[in-house]
Image 1 (cartoon, one colour):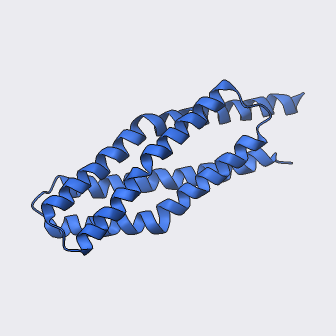
Image 2 (cartoon, rainbow, N blue to C red):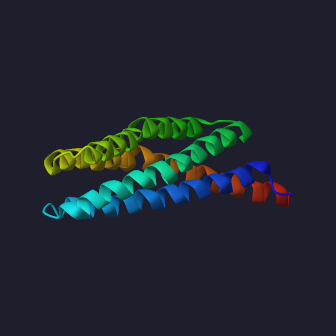
Image 3 (cartoon, rainbow, N blue to C red):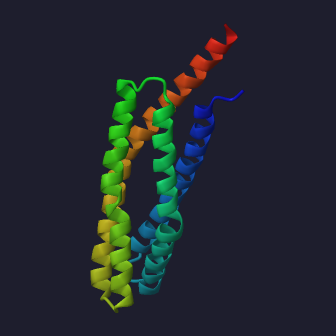
Length: 163
């Protein structure tokens, strides 16, 4: 029989994988618009697409990550120091990463109110920087530790079941 924690881990990994894909897609959208400063229609399309991606997909996916992560933490036999470091990295990532959807929503509202291209570009830079900062360190740390912990859990279960 498959241990419950492994099933939850697969669901968690699926949510994390979707999140990474979304994050990469949003980065491509934002950076393309950022490196084409004279292309106002593309920038406005980017603002609209990023808004709807956040509202319809990213926020529910992040909630799935949080719920499955909390469930996994309750299923672990013992939370080690590495688990606590991973949890801290995730909490810090989420605390910073929440800035991105808030800025995306504010920027979309500003655009809908007829905001200037200069004001929209300033908001876009904040979105890019907050996302890049949070992902660079805290998400990478949590992802690497999660991979390490999962690898060792699987290896341990192989050797334990062989005995």
